[in-house]
Every structure is written in C-alpha cells, then in structure tokens.
Image (cartoon, rainbow over all chains, first blue to last red; front, side):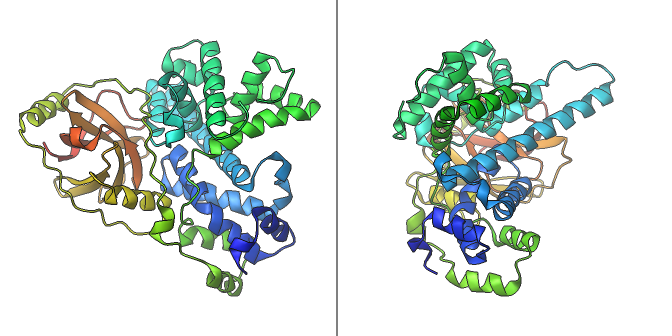
Length: 184
Length: 256
C-alpha cells in the first residue's frame, strides 16, 4: 500500500473496517508527534510512551470517535494525547501533594511551590508560532498547555487575577489561530 | 473566531476547554453548552488546530518498542507486523529539517538565582576569559523524535556540545545558538521519584534554571540563553518539581 496515496480520513475508515496495515500507516504518520507532545507535557520518556500506546490502542478500539468534521486526525490524536498527559500530570501532582500532607501531618491548602515550578519549567520547548506572542500572552498558554495547569493554577503561578489569565489566554490563542490561518 | 452570539465569558471558557485548562468542576458546564449549541464546537476546534500546530508534524515514528506494545495490546500478530513493516518508509534527515522549537518559554524568564554553589560557579565562570565550547557534533541515534530534533540542533550553525562531568558521571548536552538545547546522553543514576536533576546555565547575567530534567532523564529538551552567552552549565539534584534557587548538590559541571 502506498501510504502517500491515502488520506488520513481514508486510513481511519480502513482502520475502522479492521485494516491493520492502514492502522500501522496512521501510526507511522503521527506517532512521532504524539510522542513529542506527550514528552513535552510529561517530561518522562516512559510515561510519554505509555500515553502514545494508549492513544493508538484507543484509536484502534474505537476509530469512530474520530469525527472529521471536528478537525483533522492529527488534531484529534494530539488532543487525545494532551488530555491523557494532563491527566497524568495532575494525578501525579495530586499524589505527591497527598504524600507530602501525610508526611508532614499538617494541612496543605494549595499545591506547593515546587509543583508550580515543575509544571512551568517543563514548558520549555515551543515552536516559533508561540514565540511570536508577547510573553504576557505566551506564558499563560505555555503553563496551561505544556505545563498541564488549570487557569487557576496559572493565575497562582503568575500571581495574576484569574480573569486576567483567562483574558490573556483568549487573546493569545486568537493571535495564534490567526497566524495559523484560522479565523481570528 | 467566526461563531457569532457568544458572550466573552463563554468564549474564554471554550478556549480554556480546548487547552484542557478548565478544572473538572467547570468542564461539565462547557460540555453541556457544547451539547446544546453544537456550533460552539467551531471555537474549540479552531483553538485545538492552532495548538496542534505547535507540535512538529514531520517527525519520525515513535520507537519500535511502542509499536510492539500496541501490536501486542490489539492482538496484531507478527505476520501482520512484517507485512506492514515492509511498507515503512524511514524518511531521510532532509525530510525532517523542520527547525527545532526556538521558543523562549521559561515561565520564570528573568529570575536570577544565587545561593550556595551558584555564587562560586558564577564567579568562576566570569573569570574565564575565553569561553570555548567544543564544536563537535552530538552522536544521537534515530527513532526518538526528540533525538531527531537534537541531531538537527547539533548540525545547525553555531551549535555547541558540552559534556558535564564529575565523579564518574557525565551528561552530553547540545545547545543551538538560539538557546534551544537537548540533554543527549547521560549516565546519571536514576533518582527516587521525589528527586530530580535540574540544569542551570551560567551567563554574564547570572545563573538561571535551564530546565528540570526529571529523575531518570532520557533525551530532554530545554531552552536557555544563546549558546555564545553560556559560560558554564551545571546539573544539580533537587526536590522533584525543581526549584527557583538551587538547594541541592552539584552532580556534574561544564565550564566551571
């Protein structure tokens, strides 16, 4: 099969019909990006590979979840990747916070500074599209997307009101979408 | 965005939903809104497409072991795998010339750190009259997308490689002139998950964190000052999550 002759949508359609070769071609095309994004968020090769496996096994098990009217296959896979990676980050953060509470036997109201630093420090590799944004807009987007933080955590990390963070993210994303050719 | 009649609050929440940045307690409301007004998906889709564009598309597939695990999980037998493998194209480096990310993230971009060993390192580095990065090339294997990016960085003009060493441990780093860098290889012993390795860059302006490397680093990307500005590099061991000011011990150094 000549993979260049088949669109992603056609490959998923064939995958849905049980065509394992088509599925492998989807993997060949997109697993590199999936792994790269997972690793950016998780900063852990092993966990990133696990997420990559989960994403493709889920695609194989339930290919009809991909709806071409809701974006490209690549975006679908990366969205799934991001969701799983963020779940892992938040789960790990929760686990660590719980362990620290137990160890110290004192109540902890919010995530520790270390958690904030970790999530923000992990977001250290982005493409030029994001660097075109002002740091005001770029930093909260990176903390949220690559650091796996909720907007509330981003606000805490940056010491800004939550409303300000939401507004900056929205404006930054509009700028990013525009630079990618989407309507602003 | 092209969808009309959406108030700003809802639009902001839809963007956050696309980013997975809403707390679970708030996501449910957005999912209800999406269910009741399907046209709102357009806003989510546009934002997800934009986010997807921040991840390079032209990367080689994940390592074979990942495929092997997938094949095992879905019951793909070896015969199937071999047939498919015959179709597999290993694209040449020329097809993966997408520039590595040149972002300048550093959520704490201007924070300067100085405590304990940091002052000593900063002073030692400032005394060095000439900074001599080795202009060698990193020897990285294929298979991992980050390794491919690292190889591109190693081959880019002005890139430098440095080996951080101390007491039997070594870590090779490649740094592009743009400040993009990769930890390529290391023999750093795996740490307890409650600990992490952290990389620091010393420039004329001080000592800054270049990134948290994790408890058992493989190939790790980071971003720091431009290569010609970096006078020394230090890896320390810190509490998991990393720190703004080093509180840990020095594990390996270069240029100190």
